[in-house]
Amino acid sequence: MAASALRVKDPRRAGGAAQARLRILLGHLQGPATPAIAASPTLAAVVPSNFHPPKFQYTLDNNVLTLEQRQFYEDNGFLVIKNLVSDEDIQRFRNQFERICRKEVECPGIDIMKDVTIAKSTHSLNENIVTKIQNFQGDEELFRYCTLPQITKYVECFTGPNIMAMHTMLINKPPDSGKMTSRHPMHQDLHYFSFRPPNSIVCAWTAMEHIDRNNGCLVVLPGTHKGTLKPHDYPKWEGGVNKLFHGIQDYDANQPRVHLVMEKGDTVFFHPLLIHGSGSNKTKGFRKAISCHYASSDCFYTDVKGTSQENIEKEVQVLSDRKFEGLKIQLKDIWMIRARLVKGKRINL
Ligand SMILES: CCCCCC(=O)SCCNC(=O)CCNC(=O)[C@H](O)C(C)(C)COP(=O)(O)OP(=O)(O)OC[C@H]1O[C@@H](n2cnc3c(N)ncnc32)[C@H](O)[C@@H]1OP(=O)(O)O
Ligand SMILES: Nc1ncnc2c1ncn2[C@@H]1O[C@H](COP(=O)(O)OP(=O)(O)OP(=O)(O)O)[C@@H](O)[C@H]1O
Ligand SMILES: O=C(O)CCC(=O)C(=O)O
Ligand SMILES: [Fe+2]
Ligand SMILES: [Mg+2]
Image 1 (cartoon, protein in one colour):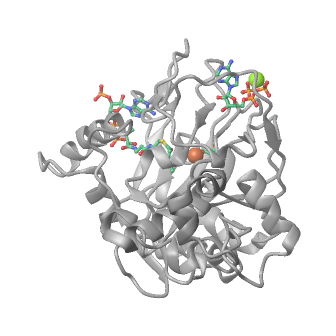
Image 2: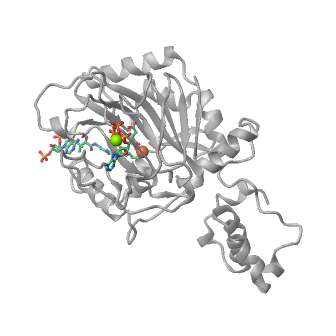
């Protein structure tokens, strides 16, 4: 059976023999279960002798990625494609961002965020106050980013043909005030998500200008997509931390990091378990990037009760209580509201 057919099923819903079979096969998709199977006479009897574990777990069969690119993503959990978005498109996104910041256009459902150091200031909004806008799925001009064919062509290698846009952001990392609040702590995006499986989710993140360590590039820990979701909470930073910027609790700052230096239009695709963050912006300019988290529409929603994600659900509920006036909604409801179809059929999400 093709891995792509399997990975969309929720193994908990399958029963009996089918469940046993799925578990065995999913074992190959999720981790090195082979030695255990070989050691067990009962399980070994179920696995045909000509069965070869799939070589690839994190990418689907496709004719877009070269073998080398595919292997790179499998090993590292990210892949940078140079020069994927045109200057013209980036200028359009930048113009629309400025119109939204200045409140010249209405954008239903959007969240506008200021840096924690100026959160209580009463400046009227403009593009030099806003640190990011989120959930622009309702804005046709910005949503164009999510539908760019040269991006969805790559996305499909991870999600398959039924593609939902789940989360969108335009990040406008401000010059750091000196308190280091422009840093984004090391985290896994899956911490925010109540849908699975992780291998059917991918983020596309496009640099809207040259980005390096000076203006706070993305920083990744290669290979960490092979691990599990870690507990997240606010880092104990002296200068303060932005709302909802949770970081990995036991993060060891001495682990080897890779700084992704990118040119305008370059796009990185990365796995939702990949540990990443971004550094402070030491320049006077606002560092801009645009991103979308995509998921296969046959992913399924999960309840985060009793998991390490309870803390994020509680916080998001407090925020949504203010917006939706006391309606106690779950994290998965919030994602359901935000989700928008990009391509193919809407199934579960
Ligand atoms: C893929 C992974 C997910 C993404 C990962 C991330 O990016 S994590 C970050 C995800 N971020 C988000 O989802 C943020 C969504 N943003 C929002 O909901 C909003 O921007 C916000 C709640 C932060 C701010 O709300 P509003 O702008 O509507 O309201 P307002 O300006 O009145 O602020 C409301 C209260 O929040 C405080 N506040 C505002 N911005 C803040 C910030 N950056 N850090 C801390 N606190 C902040 C204000 O001081 C105020 O406190 P008082 O009430 O005390 O006066
Ligand atoms: N001491 C630290 N403790 C926890 N997280 C850190 C620490 N230093 C950096 N990080 C995290 O590592 C990532 C990358 O940081 P990086 O070192 O690149 O940036 P920076 O410290 O802002 O700038 P610089 O380039 O001067 O080191 C960010 O996500 C940041 O939050
Ligand atoms: O700094 C950035 O652009 C990346 C932020 C990020 O990783 C996130 O918001 O999840
Ligand atoms: Fe992130
Ligand atoms: Mg540093």
